[in-house]
Length: 254
Image 1 (tube, helix red, strand yellow):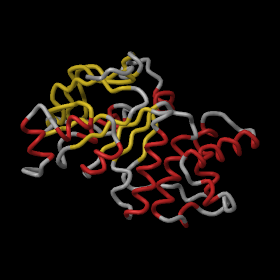
Image 2 (cartoon, one colour; image 1 turned 90 degrees about the horizontal axis):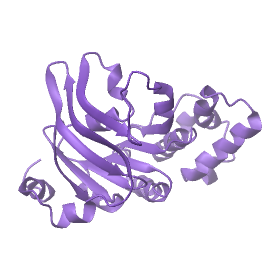
Image 3 (cartoon, rainbow, N blue to C red; image 1 turned 135 degrees about the vertical axis):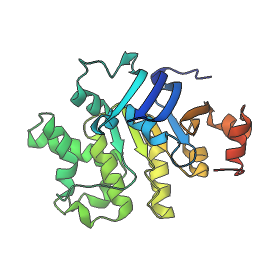
């Protein structure tokens, strides 16, 4: 099914919030430098699944899991795993843009500074390249000292993408990155995702099935914590193997 190189995946993963089980026996192989969309009704486990790949669920008390979560064929939950290095490798963009109340420049330079880059010329180069990669440079290059909070919603989200790119990740996790945006800004984010997949492995959670069909190469359908079906997006949307997938795609439930 996945004919390209595998970047990341899970093997027989169960995940729990306390006594409540959120994921059931999930196994998946996610291809490198492709866009994988996660679809399914609210509360079906999509965001839990997404956050396992940068261990964001770890910060929630009482969570635990069984099974393996792998990136580049290595388990990321081994005790000796460097969490800072993992989160450098796996960037995340949230549903609500969350720029720091600092200048545009400082927002993008924040990550590289944390990772030890202090030389101003190098920081300037990283900021410019990251903003260009996020299709924002031309709009903000003359006001890099302006507070990021003054940007529009769509610009703030692209700034958050630039901030994620600044530490040179290999993977981008996107949790409904366009759900709070107007149609024009949404189109810009979708076009940007198309460009970014040339260089990054991207997983996007979306409630918008048209968006999933537009931006992704592969689609995973979740329902009540179960991975019902995973395949090429075209196949999922035109000829799914499972009746449950077809019912959801065609709006019969969910």
